[in-house]
Amino acid sequence: MIDGARFFLKEAFVKVGGFDESMSGPEDWDIDKKIKQIGKIGLLNHVGENCNPPDWELYGFIKERGIDPKDYGAVIYHNEDVFDIKKYLQKKTYYAKSFKTYINKWGQNDPDIRKQFGVWYRYIKIFVEKGKWKCLFRHPLLTMGMYFLRFLVGVKFLMRG
Image (cartoon, rainbow, N blue to C red; front, side):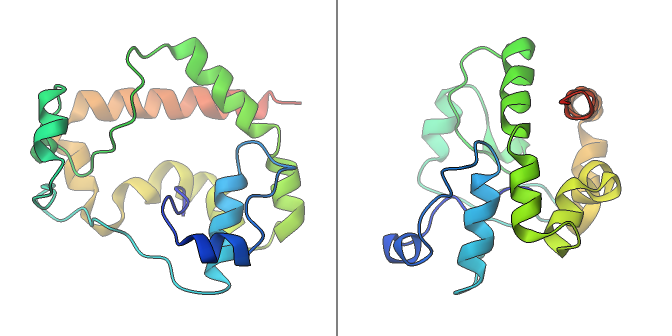
């Protein structure tokens, strides 16, 4: 619900008209919704009760870069070498500029929109569903840091004007 489809067939991408170029940020949610209209979307990995990902061919590649995937519920190798909170919040502010366009396109009562922008789902349910709450308890400092970032993003969203 929060993360849009990342991989899909080119034929599906073309069939739904590609990305909506009037958006900058929620275009990934938008294409996800368009692809759901013509087929199913699934997850490659499921975070299980023990928070260990399945064995996969990129395990060594990720581990060599300092993260052992077995310590986390999911790993995406996204090369953001040094975290800069100012740049992170600027990026989130940029994404938020198109939220109104996205919401208007699908309607504020759309079930996905209600979850994506609802406080309950966005800040609580997404992090506890399907047993993910167990991972939060195993990593309390990371959990506090994540919620601090979520709080800052929420403030930026409210201040977007």
